[in-house]
Length: 197
Length: 197
Image 1: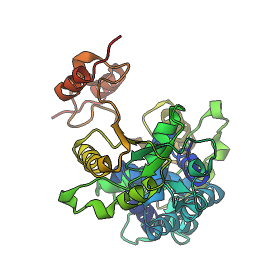
Image 2: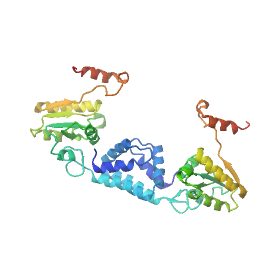
Image 3: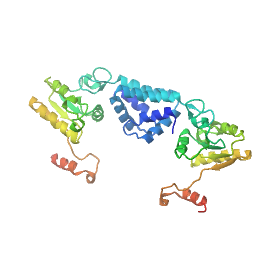
Image 4: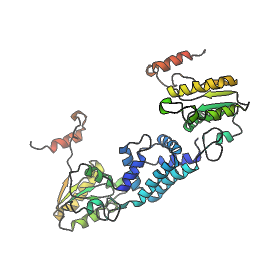
């Protein structure tokens, strides 16, 4: 239907998550109508941005240089390492402005169905970070879904013999939500994890 | 929160219609995790695509060369011109595979509130196309909203003295919809435009 350059734009855009063919086409038409200068700026931000992104050699988070800002920050406590699936999760935890330790980004979760085993994640790198005696606690903050739980248990089993404290983030009812809408598993985890007031 | 290249990506993406800051950030994180080759292809499609897009000198539709595929197609009837607001509307009408005439893209609708007057639209170009005697009918297919209606009436008034037939697309209840949910104005237009069966 549309001319070739617009079709090509729409095709590329529709590969992004959450953008179906219809929205991709709407976006492509919009981009076609944008001043060239703005499109150059958009395309430039994507391409130059991607080229500028590296992985922190310490924790595996996105970094502009060799190490990320968090690992490079002397004020972070190096006694705690919070293990997450993706750089996006680091950003989520950082938003709460509460955690002052370091991170370790696995780059995925165990998923035998998709052929992702321990060697595909940055687990070996985590173990080698623990050989430094300063680490006292590893907080497993993978997602509370099946793969996230399996990954957390796997890592917990590996780390226990090393004498480091291994914790898992709490499961329970989200703050501000309604008990009525909580699913049974969440509710049962919330009961299980109850604390004295 | 995020590192600078990701922030910049998110900022640029959030300028697109329908993409808020939260989705922009999600997209930026996704793009950061894409292979460089794919990002190059995405950014290239946007920038090269935009550069390849011109406006048809006949109808104002998007074109790769000087005239668009529709104007260049000898099989289209040059007796009908369908007037629309945007190239996107041409694509919508083409999708029905029913209309065989030509188009004229206004590039907007009259909107005194936003300072858009007749000189900002391609109305003069429409008049000059009519000086060619082959055009028998001008179909006004601007949107059925206030600005679209105002633009259609304005153009109709201009064209009437030129002896060309001027028509407006029908208003009524959309096919497949439910009468109960039709608003009163649409329903009254549907009654007004009723036809013998």
